[in-house]
Length: 289
Image (cartoon, rainbow, N blue to C red; front, side, top):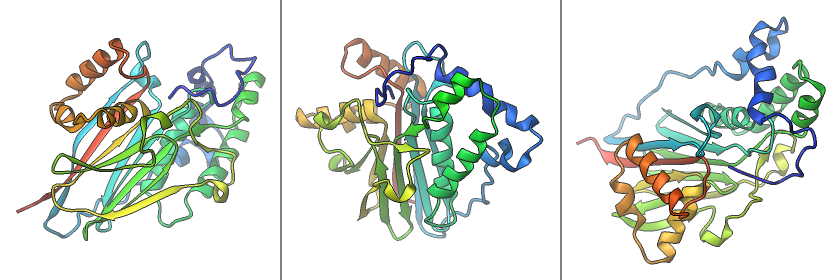
């Protein structure tokens, strides 16, 4: 996600990826294990407990393409899925390129959310992040940039076996609900003109209670599809809907990562989609019988 949400740092002689290399990998060798990499990266997943029901939550599409000219390791779109406790949870985050450690922050947001034990998950993560940052041996200019914070959008979807669902969002990563190939709703944005260079973001510094999470909930049916997308493809989908086209017919044809990458590159060549990290996830509710 290319975001000009702050003035360009005059010390920006290194990319955000080089900044990341200064600190995150070195934690494993730190004598201070309290905020070591095991805390931030070795997420302890609880054993997956499949809902005891006749339903299945099938992730039928999970495709990611990085910006043209970048390596996949530089992609700042991160997602995670966990199925347990009679529900499925998916979270998607798009790191803001202009901030340091944006990819790492996006990763921590999604991992922490889907594996949380309660509702208070963001504040503890921010505390851990800040304490980790203080212990990093960064150069003075890298530290100055990192202290401005890391930022990312956030989108989550949780569906229970009673088919009730809830989504949370900050920013321009979007959820689309489709029933029988007919568009039901989009969240949190409803129009293509709402996309801009300054989306709302979750930062490492802002107080969690001051972050405005948009929320939506509903009741699903068997066969419903939930598309979770980052901003580039979300904007394309809304433009298609506004032009009285059916984007779901095209998306149905994409059955592999290769087909998705080729299609996204074609759209970029046609200037029909922004050259940005692009993620498409599609969850379908199916009957096991």
